[in-house]
Length: 281
Image (cartoon, rainbow, N blue to C red; front, side):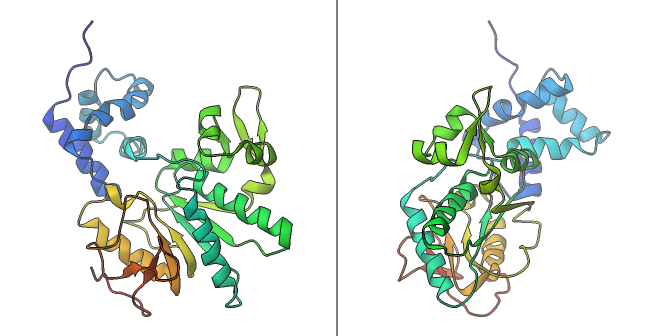
C-alpha cells in the first residue's frame, strides 16, 4: 500500500504562513507531519483528495471561510485537567492574596483550548466556597479556536479526556455520565466560567484587570515577532501585583523585561512595572 502523496514545499509554506499570520504560531519544519494529521478531517469534509488541493482552493479565494477552518484545525489545543497539579495550589494562594486587598479576584485563562484548565480552577474554588463560604473568583477563558470553544462551552469530554488528570472523586462529583460514554460537566460548574473567542496576537485583552493570568504552553509556539506583543498584552491585563502563570517548560527569562520570577510564589511570574507598558521587549 502507498501512503498519500507528499505535501509540496509550496503548500507547506502557504499553510504555515497562514497559521502564523492569523495566530502568531509557528509550525516548526520537524512538525510539518501535523499538517496532514490535523487537516485530514477537513479534507474529508470538503471531499478533497490532497492537501495541495486544499491549498489551491485556499488561494482561489472562492470560500472566504476556508482559511478560518484551516487555522482552527492547525491550532494546538493540547490540554488536560489539573495539568502540573502543584501549580494550582500557587494559583489558589495568589487568589487568596488578591482577596486580602478587598477585591473579588479575577482570573483569565488565555489559550484555554477545550476548557479543562478553567474547569479545573472552577472545581477548586467551588469546593473552597462550599467549605468556607468564600466568594468565587471571576474566571474568563479565551481561545482562538471556535471548535475548541464549542466543546469547552458544552463541557463534554470523552472517557480518555476526563481521566487525564481528573481524580475519580471530582469526576463523580462534578460530571454526569452520558450514554455514549462521554462525561458532561454539571451546569453548576460550567456556569462559573465565561468563554469568549480571543486572539492573543490580533485582539485586545479583555476589559478590566486580572489578579492571575494563565498563558500556559502558548509562548512555545509563537514566533519571535509575536512574543513581545503577547507579553505586553498580558502585562497590561494584570493588576500591578498580579501574577502570570506559564507552562512548566516556559520562562520569561531572556524573553521579556515585563515579568520576573515571583519572590513570594515561586513558579509564578510577577509584573516588573506598575505602569502600562508600551510593547517593550
